[in-house]
Length: 356
Ligand code: ADP
Ligand code: ARG
Picture 1: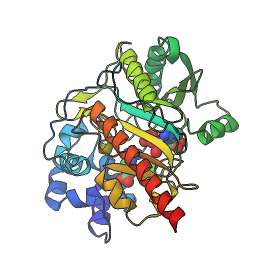
Picture 2 (picture 1 turned 120 degrees about the vertical axis):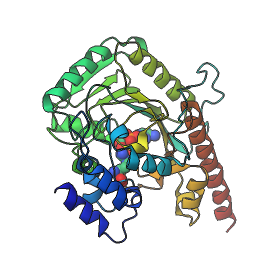
Picture 3 (picture 1 turned 135 degrees about the vertical axis):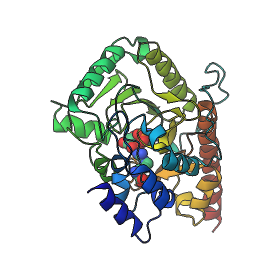
Picture 4 (picture 1 turned 30 degrees about the vertical axis):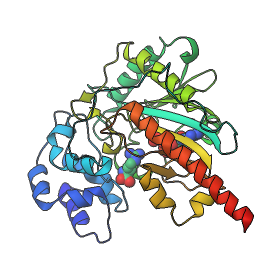
């Protein structure tokens, strides 16, 4: 579909609640429709997914790092709305003191939290995002990433497994264990996320599968630290060490003043950090107050197979919703407070159920 067709579909949509629909006004559309970034990215590349999927929550992606400047008129409005900030003055990275975090295991009883995961996204400054990157560029970027990963030592040392040539069974097992991404997200597909699949995609992990790197999924890179149980302190510290090691390995990551680290989706900008637990909260989740509860703590609930999936057996993925306008340490603290509140609320509801 041409940019005009995409725009008309969005303009005529009723019941569409996306941030794209809200912020791409006629005036902005007219001003932006003819623009192009140095990577060749257009307005159509940014809005295709949100126009094809009118049930999108966000609805817009950045075609490449420069889109945040060229299409700032609409992207800035979406970013402010999603992250609930008035100004785009994201602070410099601050991971806190990992030797003195002040938190460790959020669930020493082991009754609630099944596993904990913290991830960040990173983009290479000199490559476009999925709508514009070529197969050759994706392969070159994969090669540069793998040579940086090869330098990791100690607990972080591991092996890179390209998706090309990986058996279906291995892929399925890694997905079932929540380690690997898949190619079934229609929002990402319509944004160009699966072009030339599976070429240039892969996963790196250490022996214990507690540190993982996704290459060329939604973002160029996703660094992930995860383990069973609720020890957020261990998971977060490992991730911070990994980020530092990757930064000193010669890679340069896209970052802008006021926006923080750049990602394909504006919902991930800034810290790019999503700290989550898989947690058993059947009573809280069934309560009519659950949505308001999540909003109050700035947390988001997802199903256990990731975004846009359902909960199984009252187990939810609970994470910080905001990633921009606060530091990494503050984002993880926001998630910690939310998770602690979930546990205490679930316990309270459990007591009431017993009395009744
Ligand atoms: P992200 O945007 O953080 O990559 P997704 O919602 O797409 O998140 O989830 C990616 C994968 O990570 C999914 O398989 C999901 O089940 C898994 N995952 C997320 N949080 C946890 C967690 N706390 N423990 C185990 N697996 C997790
Ligand atoms: N584009 C999708 C939407 O608007 C996903 C947005 C956030 N998630 C993501 N993985 N970037 O609903």
